[in-house]
Length: 443
Image (cartoon, rainbow, N blue to C red; front, top):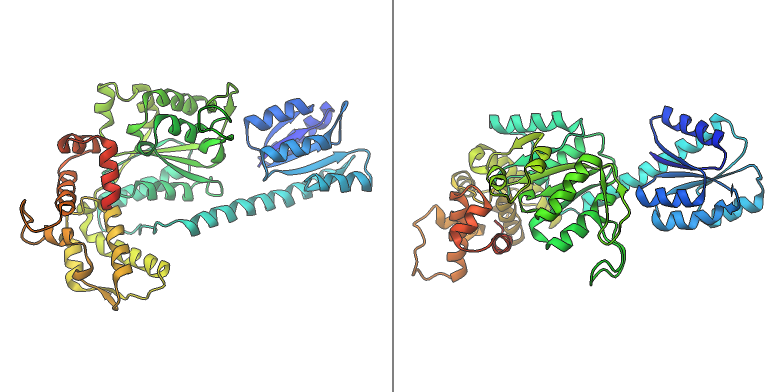
């Protein structure tokens, strides 16, 4: 737990700090209301122990401000002037417990363990709610492909540390899922996991989403936004498509990686956060560094541990197991009981090139489950563009929709190029447009 102690007696601050640190909790001890509010603005606390009398200030007045900034905070009021009235008033203002002075270590231990257990339970409930609302199926970890087996083993090894991890691989190979698994296997698993897709937001909105902003920082900033870094305190933040991060934000991310410090947009106050960063890219960052589009110092700071995911076409023997896993997920989501796939559908799964990788397979399975009215999924439920790739090729001038030609062309270009940047150049469109087209066609 991250614990705040507010008491104007130095001996009590020292004693409580030793008590909490001995039990491996992080402690910040201050003597007055002003310093307490400053620290609460800089970091997220789980528990706070507040003295009732802080010089000329009333500790009860501090409760409202602390809870306004951190509604999840568990506050214990401490006082040598215990009475029923003050205890009742403390509870009315949001205190979780009341501790009369002088108290014994055993009393403090009981209060700490009880409130820490409640806080951990709340965090787990939040994580479970996130999992239940998540619309992505878990990808099976079993693989017959040696390179994928090495990926999984390396991911397990690095999960036990806080080292920055760079995930590489073509779009749709499962980088987000692997990042989620690294977090789940880590000591941070009880804390938040969040994802930011760098190319999906403008520069202004991306910086705000990452570091937060204060009210009035820009035209649409109608209220304070703490940002994902603050929201992931103690957990993991996954930055997808890091190669598209604007240069102006790259310097701020580098500072955060080095010092764990940042400022919200429109605010000069420096804040700290304990957040692990996992990044992912499907572009050649070495070329981006050479061309000046990506900072060299940030590249080396991010590229401590590199894990490269193979494409789905390189592990075709795994397609059937992954498809079965996704079928079970979408069966449950759509209240269906489809038993499996026809032999012909499975043959197409094995022979198809999957330019969109696991993401494309996911969309194919979800679509088939929704449309299926029998006990198994056959070829007739697969997208026409997918089946046509394995049949006589669609040609310009064929009696097909224009969007079918466009989708097929984008699929083939993506399959024949090594990065989004290269594919966009071949197609003659910018990366943002290609990103939208991929989303439109489920690539």
